Amino acid sequence: MEKFAFIMHPISAKKDISRKYPIANYLPEPFLELVLKHQKPIPVSHITGVKSTDGTEAEGWFIGCPLSSRQLMTLPPEFCYKKILECITKAEEYGAKIVGLGAFTSVVGDGGITIAKSANMAVTTGNSYTISTAIDGSMIAANLMDINIQNAEVAIVGATGSIGRTCAMIYDGKCKKLNLIGRNIVKLKEVSHLITKSDKEVLDDVKKGVLNADIVVTVSSAVDAIIMPSFIKSGAVVCDVARPRDVSISVAKERNDVLIIEGGVVKVPGDDLDFHFNFGFPPQTAYACMSETIMLALEKRYESFTLGKEISIDKVNEIKYIAEKHGFKIAGFRSFERALGDDEIRKIKSHKL
View 1 (cartoon, rainbow, N blue to C red):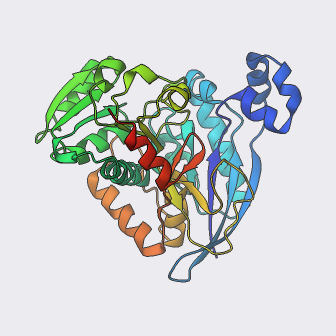
View 2 (view 1 turned 180 degrees about the vertical axis):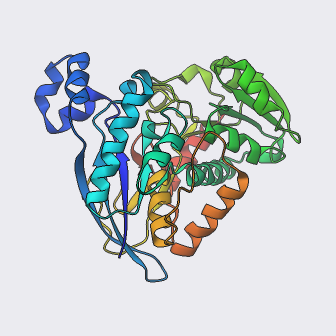
């Protein structure tokens, strides 16, 4: 039996704590974050029933890191490293041999490199498979919306990050124009030098960069939504890989002519699979970053597979091969935590101007 662990954390202190403790709704966010800061990591659930198509089985554990998204982005990296390493120590107690860094624990500092050097087991951010599913998902969705990808304008929001950078590199040559969007123009220009086949533009204004895009892949590290209803072209596909979301919930209410999908929703193999935890997905499905950790355990690749701010296309292709070998695949589309059926996608397309 192969063993893995995955670290998760509350996206919002108030929202997530109140799910279990309703009294948190009446307490201020700073107070709740102060409480979190002094907590120890906790085991959230025991994952059972993972079974590859080749018969290999695995079990794992979700380990809760007691820091919110905002805290992981604003507290000193050294403090966050300490908390994450405490989570890894907890995973060791259960016999895990590889641990995945979920959500903002993969963003802190140098993208897992320092954590991996200090940990007693393999560490991965899961970003290689996140990239793979973001590209595949956005392209499949574009075809469903009758978007000709070769003639399309593609916007990458968060193009200087580890996921955005490689997404841009993979889309290079597949689309007509690439808009590279981020907060740091100097770093965006560095990414721009890697784009040699498609037309390109560097922008630090999200609205301007997204406004005429047919396909948007958004994966910023913003704590609040940065893409609003008025930003998006009619008939566009937006693949929101970020957690917390980059796309405002108001888009779902005001724009019935754009297709918003969550990047990286994956079917995990195993007829009896049970995460014993509800993170808003249908049964037996998970985020791509979680899935990368699981498939590496099934492959017995107990190594730090994806780390740092630069991810090669070769890594993405390799993890895609491993995924297919063990029976992982994209599990349709979801939008704002609910499944999107074919009829609804056709209806969205019918509203395209």
